[in-house]
Image 1: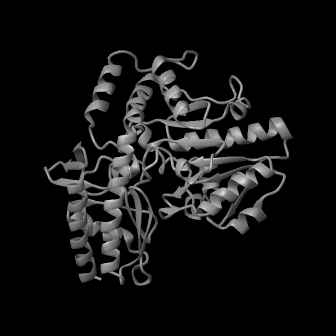
Image 2: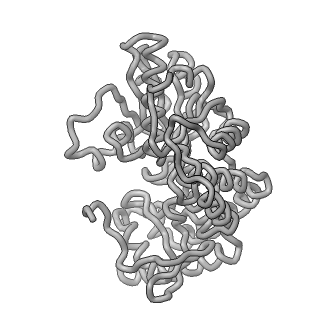
Image 3: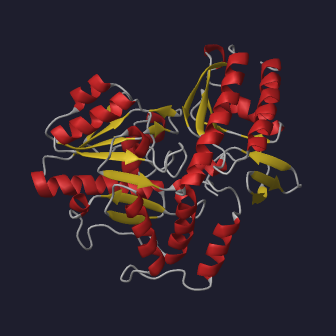
Length: 392
């Protein structure tokens, strides 16, 4: 394969719930959830049954046709959110690509060609296409790919003054992650989100929320905007929407969606019946109030346990941040740059964690995680930190 990844030396071969097994039968407690994808864990019974049933009926039709599963999924998503219309793709990057294209198309059709600038945040992550990686504002992902798409302004996350200064009559959209994921598990402040909404409206621009990682129950709300009291014009969702089956969606209002006409955008596999059937089962499960209530309970228990670890090891950790079951342990000054090293120690304890940049250990277990599994993960993490310090 092209050397774009640095995979672990062991190969996962089987998963169930919050657990993974490798080729040698070794069992791991998986608190990565496939990078916040497997919200219902591995091999969820109802999702497997849905996939199997749909696979025996219809996998794919060209986009000259629609299909029953995608119509049901679009209905469920729009009924549960602010949106009136949905566009389906295969990934979060493609959902964001559609959102950015729609924003420019909408502005062009209503205000002319001069209104095309996107305002986004440094340290964001919106995908790996040339357009989305340029909007992301992380130089490490754009170096060597120049010239980059023009018409993008970046500012510091959560800086209301910088946001106000960046606005102008040529702005077509503001793009924000309500919780920055890859950039360090950093929640947007309520003030920043409110200012974004007010400024977007004042400048006749659209507000786009990228909820690819923080959506689908990850923060304890179905989508993070629902707890923020700020409603976007466009929302993107993916990752946990398919629980590992590739699917992404862009949700928007009737008025904004009308800027797209037949042929203006498309996706060969987007919204195919197999992906849509799986996503609908996942969405129906996660959107249940009782399920989301349990996510909030689990998030509280995990946060309390991690806060205790942060307090116990102030030389290692500076703070804990995040929301719900999307948490980041920020390394203290003397240990900056060593997040990956710490996760190698947790792997030695058969606990799988992620990083969010070199200075943050990211903890994103499946949303179905039990209290016993949280407590076991905390014990393993404590042992790993002890070993980490011992070899520091």
